[in-house]
Length: 327
Ligand code: TXA
Ligand code: MG
Image (cartoon, rainbow, N blue to C red; front, side, top):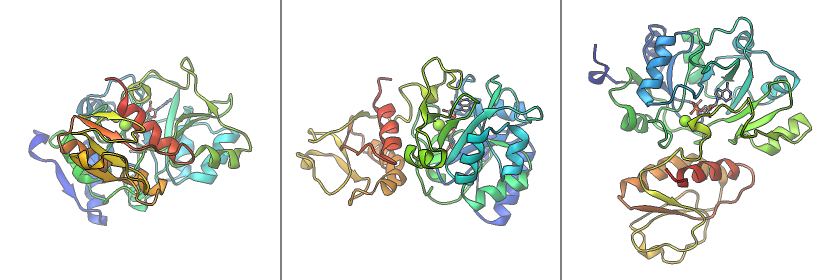
């Protein structure tokens, strides 16, 4: 059958969840909402389903996927938790945190989803609808962000369809994603926790739980697979992205933050504000939709106002830096 004829929009109801779970159990692909971004879901134990995820996104197979689970009991089957992982799981799950831990002896997440690594990335999403789906599916669900590889992540069902319509069987509609940037990824591989990707669980929140400053992943770190998610260019709109802009040039689109008006705003072909009063959580929630909107204006360049680097600002700046990186 040709899935192109049949990407269905499933409502975020118990009936929609049941339909989505049945499709996942049958090895089909279903995009699902989480509090961060929408994921492109497939049965993580089924290498054919996982291969279909890589193909649908055009994602290189050396970049491993996150396995989504409904609860900690299910997560413990897949991976081995050291004291740091236990503390982070207790503090932040369910929520926007992914833990990379050694795969356990009974791990059911297939090798392809783990890109052949002896670690596994685990996440228990914050949204009850998502956990209902995961519980009904009864298997770990592999879920990269449901966008074409390298493009802006989706924060609504419409964004998923804009990128992947016809490349998956269904989208479960959970409305707009509340957080708006992907989960914080922390590796706990026995040699001290390391931050692989900043997100809504901030460095300061992690330090408060662990009582130590979290380390960075080095370029040759085993916890840091060579993958596009960690390469410079990612999360990229079609337009060029110019960071820390304090003035707008003729023909540019403007992405604003806070009450300040950049010089030359009248020159902008389009403008969006991430948060008029400078709220970083609001800015994160609006980030990817605003980039998609400004891209649709046709402007060759999106000029982005300065965003503070503290708290959630680190994750926003990380995504914008990748969007701005040479392609
Ligand atoms: O918020 C999120 O995390 C979303 C939603 C759908 O859950 N998912 C997401 O997946 O952002 P993805 O595939 O776009 O990003 C997963 C990141 C990648 O940077 C990948 O390299 C890293 O996690 N990762 C996965 N498994 C890993 C492993 N075993 N070791 C190190 N990094 C890993
Ligand atoms: Mg992604």
